[in-house]
Length: 292
Image (tube, rainbow, N blue to C red; front, side, top):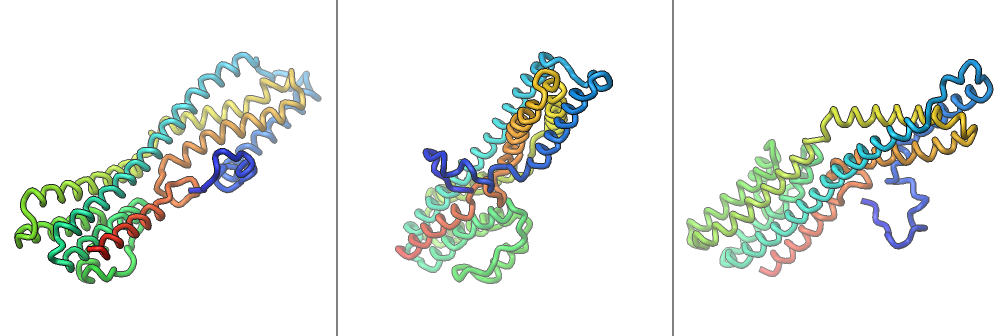
């Protein structure tokens, strides 16, 4: 995610990275070139190509419907982006809660505390890897055994496999009398929430906007932007070219922003800073481990 000061317009008005300019440049240029062709034909060969001009009123009515489609598209994408942020906030809090309870309730067995907190620390990184289709978890942390880590790394769903190991360690602690049944239930609720949040992130990642809606919106956008100079050429002349440039930039940009934030777990500048979330969780859990 690109950091910026929302109170200082001059700090980002001319930024290219993350502004969708590169992504929509070809579409906007195509619209501008086509508008130049239309204006030239209507202006210099009106008897032959005068029929290219269309009523501006009808075109404006189509623009109203297109605006509603774009609003729905952007709102739907932002809902997914914000839900993803809330889910990662939940992962952060539940990792802290689980580590907090573990470090206190299992304090009589420091090695077990270190192992459980080690697995909790790996959980957000494993979730990030799954959301980005990663196949590796990196090197084995010193708090967990190489055998267990290799088994997790070979699993299909990293977060669920880690949650299973954490649950097994907590159950073993209950069987040894380190915690009672009520404490086990409380700890397991945190593990369950971690799995729920990870699964909800999976749901966002694997459920794009319905295909029919995306296709219809893009067809409508192309039709509107490429017929816009036909509605403007007769009355505006060559001024229709910059008008087409501005309008096509705005409309294509809005649609592309929706595409950009639809899946907030990727690596682009407008995606969530998951690496920093994971680093923050790791820092907090290391402090808890060292204090226990």
